[in-house]
Length: 173
Image 1 (cartoon, rainbow, N blue to C red):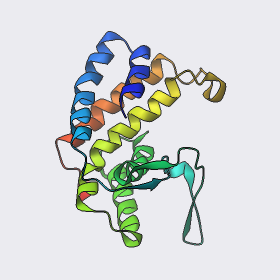
Image 2: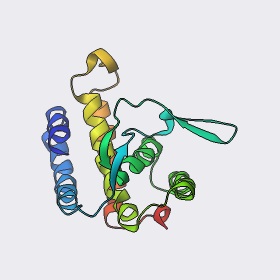
Image 3: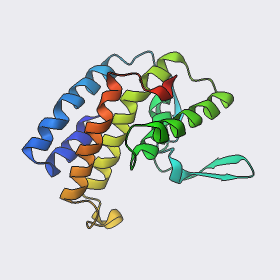
Image 4: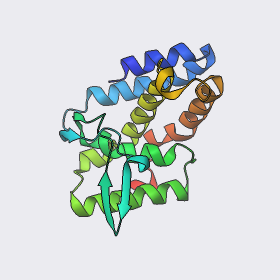
């Protein structure tokens, strides 16, 4: 799950940035190795604010190019990843994520193990998306937005959000 994305990220990073990424990745690998009791099923794969459209109180999901069998917690965490992309931890991001989780839970219960896994999958999701942006897809994304400054923003994001692995975020309550 993490090997290919981390390899792509590492190629774009400085040695110091790789040292910052390494401990987080090792913690995520350990978590994923023990994630056998999580719910699995058909997932959207990229369920973020850009792929959800609302009209008259109804949500419609679009863009199923990443759809596949996977972990429910990873699918739910995609929304949190989209919300946190340009936000630091705090009431704004937490409120948006908590609101999504409340709404999701009204339609389908989120099992406790899946809910507890959301912070780890938030980081997995961000690593995955950064690897897509940096992974030689110039034909799709262009190169102008995904150079050294992008890598630095990713590292800063990781520094800001990695503490969710240690401190239960308010949005999980």
